[in-house]
Length: 230
Length: 342
Image (cartoon, rainbow over all chains, first blue to last red; front, top):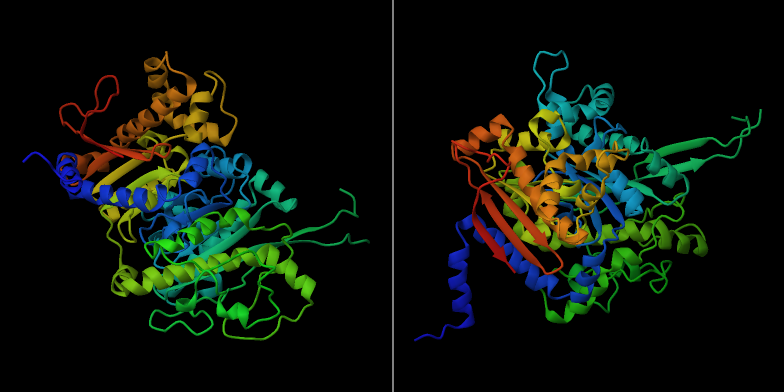
C-alpha cells in the first residue's frame, strides 16, 4: 500500500525533521501561527512584508510571563518591542547604552512611532535585584547589577518615601517608580524631546500585576505655560 | 533666553484606568463580555448616552482567536485598528476617568467630550479592551497556571529576537506565558563578552545563571532594518548614529557576507547577512565563560533560527559544540539538526 494520506505524509516528514520535543513545541507554535494568522490574512501580511508601520514603541521586561503581545494582544506590525531586564530605559548615552539608543532612534526617527509605552510588572527579578543589592560595594557587580543600577534614582525615591515598608512592598513600589524613571529618561533623547514638543509623540507608562490580574496605564502630560512677565 | 519665553513643564500623572479585576471575581455587568458580538456595542457605552458610539472609532471588543470562522472579518478590522486610531494629536487632553459600572454623565460639554474620545481616550480604551480580553480568554481560563506563574517562572528557553514589530516570538512560535525569557533588541544581536556590560548580556546572565534555561534561541528575520543598516555602513567612516554604533557588533557577519556574496544584489546580500549575523551571535554567546561551561556540560543548547515573513517559513539549526574545536578557524559555526518549516 503506497498511498499515504496527507496527514500521514506530514507526520512522517515531521518525524524526520523533528529532532526532539523542543523542536516539536516550536514547530507546533509556528504551524499554528501560519494556519491561524498568516494564511488567514494574506493581504495584511503581504503589506507587512514590505514595511512595518507600528504605532508603538514598547519597552517591557524579558520576564517569560509578561510578553506585551500576550497581555495587550499586540498583533504583528503594531508594536516595535524592546525587551530587557526590568524594561528599563537608561538616559541618553551614546557610548554606554547604544543598544537601547539604537532602538529608540530607529523607532522614533525611522519608523515614526506615535507612542512609547514602558511596561513594568509584578515580581520583577531585576527590580528585586536592584533593591536588594548592597550599595556599600561589598558585593561585586556582574552584568545584571551593572544594568539595573540604571534604576538607582527610583530606588532612592522609594527608600525615601516608603522606607517604613517591608522589602517586598518597597520592591512593588519600585517596580512602578522604575517605569516613571524610564519615562523621564526617555526625554533625554533629543529626538524624543523634539517630537514631544510638537505633540507628535506620547509617552505612557504601564504596570502589569499578574498576581492580582490587573493592568494600570498612565501618561506623561506636558504643559507649556503662558509667558511669565516680571 | 528672553524673560518672555514660555516655561516648558513636564508632569507625570498617574491616572489609573480602572480595569483591575481580582482573579476570583466574576466580571461586573458593565463589561458583559459574553454579550459582545460585532453588532452589539459594549453595554457600558450603551448605558452612557453622553458617549456617542457612532462618533467613536469602531472599538468592538474582539473575541479570541480560535472562535468561530465568521468572526474572521471582525479580526481583520481589528488587526488594522491601531493604525486607524487617532492618537495623541493634542497631549493636553486628559484620559477618560470614567469608571466601569457608573452611569454618571461626563461633566464637560459634548464637543470637548468628542475631542477626548477621538484623541487620548480611544487608545486607552482599546488597551483596556485588549487586556480584558486577555484576562477573560487566557488568564481566567488558566487560573491554576497563572497562580503558579505568579510565584515563580521557570522557562526552558531564552529567546533573543529583533524588536521588529513583525517578529514577536510569542506570536510566531506560540510561546505561552512562562515558557520563554525573551530579550529583544535591534537586529537580534549578542555582543561578545569583551564588549563589556549591556542590556543583552544582563539578560543573558539572568537567564543562564539564575533561571537556568536549557536552550538559547537567537532568531533572525527577513527584511531586517538593522542588518540593512549594517550592510549600508561605509567601511571606514566612524558611526555617528546610535544604530550604527549598535549594529557594528555584527561587523564580522558583514565582512563574511561581502566575501561570500559578491555576485548577489544588495537585497540578497542583506538576506545572507541576516543569517550570518545569527551565527555571529551564536559564536559570541560562547565567549561568555559561564555559557560555554554549560554548553560543554550538556546543560545548555544553543540554537539559531530564521523567520522569513515574506514566504512564511522558519529555519532552525543547533550549534554543534565540539570541545576540541568550538569555533572553526574562519569563525564558521558547526551546526546540526537543521530544520526548515514552511
